[in-house]
Length: 115
Length: 114
Image 1 (cartoon, each protein chain N blue to C red):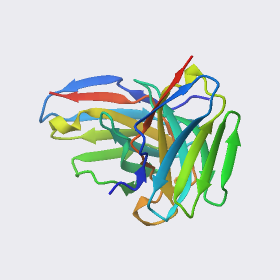
Image 2 (image 1 turned 90 degrees about the vertical axis):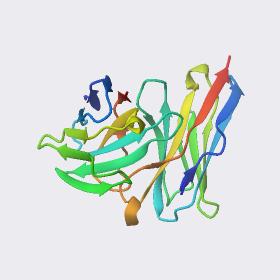
Image 3 (image 1 turned 90 degrees about the horizontal axis):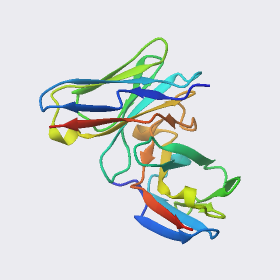
């Protein structure tokens, strides 16, 4: 049962343009959502998070949008830079139940930003 | 401020052996979570330790066990290694065990089982 899904395995974007990475979830007990970036041979690096009481959170070039009714979140990167090329993981944690305190990850999206 | 560290970086074992992986949490963090990441997949939750007690467990067999020490560092032990245990093992620490406590990851230990 894949509770967090990233349906696009890869995304290719031109430098300076917007990158939009998408994530869908099924567990209505998820109340906190995070995006991590991962380079090969490194651990995931925390990028940005959003609580379920918000619908948008912004940090520099990164903005996360949450649509609770659609159980969908997205990460926008503007402008995209070649150094943003990495695997991006969406993750969620729940306020109760068996998922409490643990992160449930999507499968990841490989972002490639071309110069 | 020191981040999350893990040791060793790489490890090669044979089937049936036992392995211990180590993690030092970030300063001020009392919660450590362990994840297994297979190739091409997202990390899968193994278990979490909060103040030296197991505080949640994922869908992993009992041969995966752990410890957390008074300084909040942690160990992951895997007995009777199987080929499918080959993966990147990630440790993450967080300020506490709440659902809105951001988890910060270490660089991981790459385990290969032959």
